[in-house]
Image (cartoon, rainbow, N blue to C red; front, side):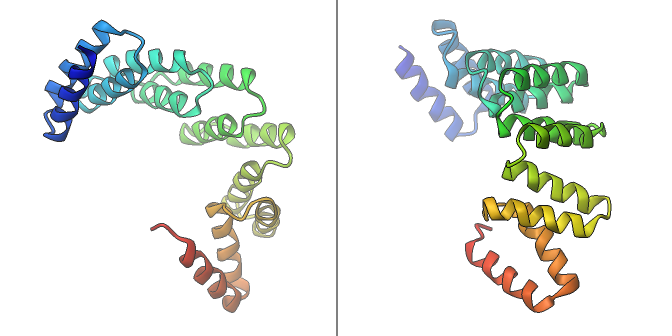
Length: 201
């Protein structure tokens, strides 16, 4: 009975009996191999138990069911990176971008991946901006990148453009905050106070 097994698994999770929970969710998957929540849960439990290979099998199976889900792709790539499989992760990301070239989430993931491995993130960023020139996320990433290489005026301009599209961009807001701290502390204080009012943490 899958319902009973799910309830048992939840109880084991509540008690932090993770090894037992993994066994129970495996019983669910034996009955229903394509059960997405169970695949995701077992992947997390396996990763927690240092079974990266097993976690990757489940994460790949979950991603195969939802190939447009950037979060599922992120998890697969994270596990691949942990195992040193950089080429496989890059291949997956490139294939996803080819299928969804207008997806900001996939571009952001591709850019973040290239940054993480010390690759040519500028090339990815330029391709992102060329494909989606009015993307607030791309402009925000551009602002952060420009600031990191010392082009502060250009960074502030890119942040302004991003924030004109959406004010809900924390990284762009902080690029502006740092600029104002240097140039206009009173204005910086006003921005910081406004950000504090809307902050979740």
